[in-house]
Image 1 (cartoon, one colour):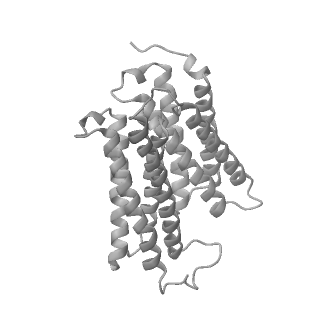
Image 2 (cartoon, helix red, strand yellow):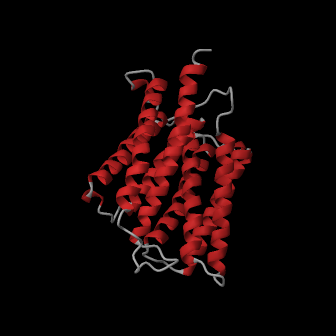
Length: 285
């Protein structure tokens, strides 16, 4: 039988989540009041705010009535992974929306930008509150390597979005880079799903060793992509004169992919350092 637990709303994490619901709701309300648009960036921003609002409200509701404890998933891993994902999504929306849809005299757009930034800060605070502390027993996604897995998957999604209209199949080098992004994304996504669904025991080998090996392989693969992608993308391919300053064109997607590839390489390097430390140092003590 479900019971109402008001303490979940008065705890620090509960208060932060209540504020997240308020600020994301205010944000998409202000943006919707200006008018709708079919532009991809507008749709992405609106989806980010609505998605984060809906899932955060659902988390609050399930914890309030105590149903979350009966779900066949790791609730701590799910909420921490979602907080990390929401932080990244709202951060992206807080950057994209003012760049393309805000002006110095656009009051509601500026207000939406401010509330979006506040929502991002709140999700960052939630990540800090739910992250596993040193010496604390917790789920994998509550640890730094787990949060990095969410970051790696999110960055890969941004890369895939930018790949939409790029003819990467023209060059084998670009095809290899897309294969790198896809393989590493699939592995990160599987880790997240297996952790939340409590299926890590199905791995045929010790999870920490599998994780370390795959992270090392991902670093090596991304190192090749960091070199190959810009070489094949920008060689004899300057920014077209038709791309006006201050406006995003298809060529700019190549720059975004290059930058995101570097970001993911750094994330995988840090992830590998943590994994190696966990396997060879912590396990030996």
